[in-house]
Length: 369
Image (cartoon, rainbow, N blue to C red; front, side):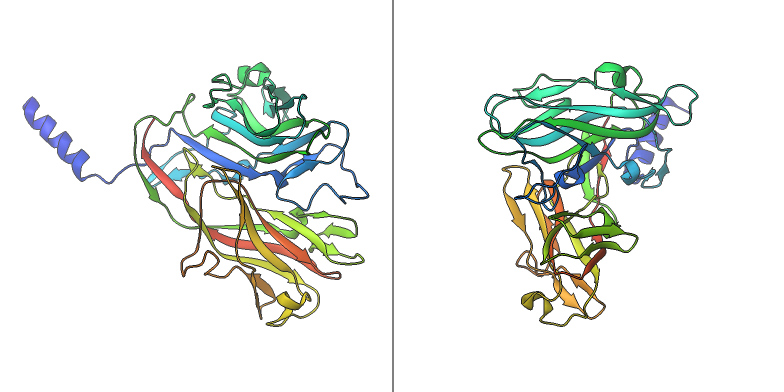
């Protein structure tokens, strides 16, 4: 066959072939600050517990260390018609923590820690990345890898023993942060995430060709993963139960599916339902306070403004559902790129938050390296 004919045939195959979703980019795994916990939880007589908010606050007059786990289960194992094995490693192109530093002089410091199977021990061992810090009051993003902010060096790796061993089998991945003592304001973690490479080390966003909305995916959570501000709240197999002298503010963090290669927006949640147990509800129970009053709450990444949906509506199936008109239109609630998202509820005494379910949009990328 002539060379020109070969080129024509190759061009025809590329032209008529469906777009392929490259398997060598990254999964973007995002979490809100309410997913973090302090190493030593405490109850403050004025503020109640550490939970119950979309952020994790340090209300104390001393520094505290928080642990923020990465849920690696959101990584899908195929793109379009091209299947590929999940690379279970700590290779990443970016990792970040959105924080607020309330102290005028003390630093807020974060670092990654992973349990890796470097040797034959099945449980693995802990390996630490280099600690990164910021100073000065206000909102900051601590870039653990590939900081685009000119105020931070352009770190291109984890550093420390984690970078040396990042290709080993990953058992767990967490981000640990030291929040300074209360200064002029409280310090808190707003949100965090990591973009782990799907197939090749050093994955990048170069030469992306287009973005599309992929299939909707189902997400769900147990009420036992929610947190409360105040005492008289108990967790168990049935969820989170309130046995107190009044209602309690509850936060249930949402762990969305991974984004393809970078943070996408706008996305949406729909059919977002909160299941509860306790007194039978009615069409007026949300307004009169005899069943939970819930909202979807998120922080917009671009300016750190907190926004929320309209109140969820009671359903005879003994659940509360976010209305389709939650954003003032007949479409599902469209959200911008966010730094944290969670379900916020005020739960009456004697009632249980059993869990939540939702459908979420999934965005996909074609091309790139």
